[in-house]
Image 1 (spheres, rainbow over the protein chains, first blue to last red):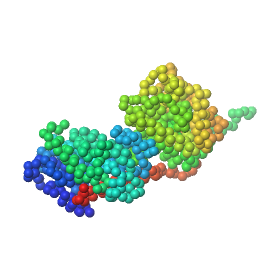
Image 2: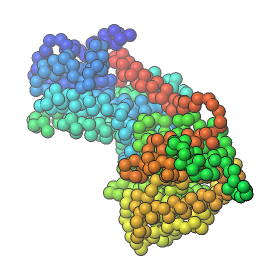
Image 3: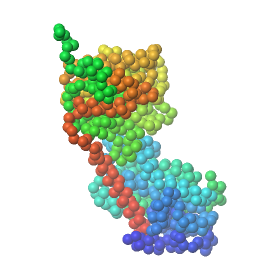
Image 4: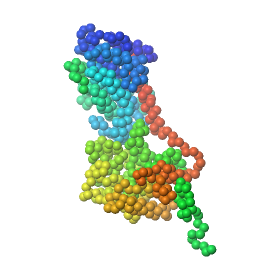
Length: 275
Length: 360
């Protein structure tokens, strides 16, 4: 299964250089500047989005879930492994997008917990008094434990590449429509049948909390953050249907495309000194 | 030889035999417990900081220490401790005075709604009646109100389920609202809010007041749960400070004396109520001060052990079985399994995300 996944991943990467291979040219053959993408599963939507439109840059993708790489990274504290270093150094001036993790909020809140909970968070819906109210501070500290690893990866990247322009990508918001999730449950089918999908209000707040924590960790690592593109959200701030992926947790190719369109001006701007 | 009331008494009634001639750790002022607590009897604990020791040891000894307001099972254990879950049977923090206990029960049953608004401490919102339960305070007034409602619901549930109520009387001094007499566990201004002598006044309960408060609290609890026994103790921990213009040692002796008398008079004539002499075990001459730490306030673990050894000996179920280790709480186990399974599923879906080249 793992080999099949890697085979398909390799095919999907198209012209990128597989990890640990020799360095690729700095600029694409057509002279477009390179933009690097390091990421876990949310990066795939971005990678696929790159291939459906024309962009003023060439996207190069380093898959953090690739066999061998994932295991090597898991064995480190800082997530910095030789293939990753080689990949980034092969493109000395290329800015980097970091799509670390991002499904921690779904782990905690996609499927209704055996003890349905709620909590207060700025920008989120008011807590439902019929659910078990968790103190906001306790919820924050709890979620922080789940995303702590992402902070380590951010700090590790900055320590390895102190001068590189880089942005942390926040994960896409949760899919607001429970019917879509129920129709595309993939591996969650049994859990959803057993326990149901948690209310969007709760899922959204856990996502907001994760994003807030990721912003703090990014700032701590001297990394900028790229927000979810406004074009992918409706008037109420929910993820638009075009952005829903074909499973319960990921965004669509359209989302990836929109994200790349939105960040292009920023990442291609004249480089600023790293903070 | 003529006989008189002091002839041939049991040893425990003679100071020399039961105090001076015994090693300190063997002194047993309990003598006989008034009743036994079964291992499955839900025990509700409340009171001053000393009561936390009782709660901890009951749980460790395999008794049914009732926690009506547990931490949500998804919270990491350290967070549960930090947020005061499980220190007492509900997350009310320290209840120092009988008046505080009475008003808690009244508030739980909607018979008293204090006028005191939430306190502010910077951006944080503080519950004046539980100023220490929420590290950093509540994020908003809304959160405070919701949490308080959840808390009082848990208090009701605990009071109605309990078979034994263990209460440690701590203080007689308290600060009260001049508006409606609501009492606070700490003086306004210490942990939030602002002290205003026009709004708050010192109350130093006397025997009559404290006794009336305790009796009223019991009566209200029995209206909702007629079948529970009571164990009263007096905290041996001296006052950290007194608001009275007198030496803190003198103020402490007064407070503890009042509470000791109140506990004594409450339990006399009530078959279902017992006084347990924690105060005497810790402060008695036999301990030679050895059960207090260097600050002369904190009770040492040796002192707590002496107290709990005698408590379980005289009030436990008498079984010689090894304590049943506190097993996994079912809700915590379900939560752990749920989150572990979700973790596995998320990892799987992340790996499979690459498999569908036609993914839109």
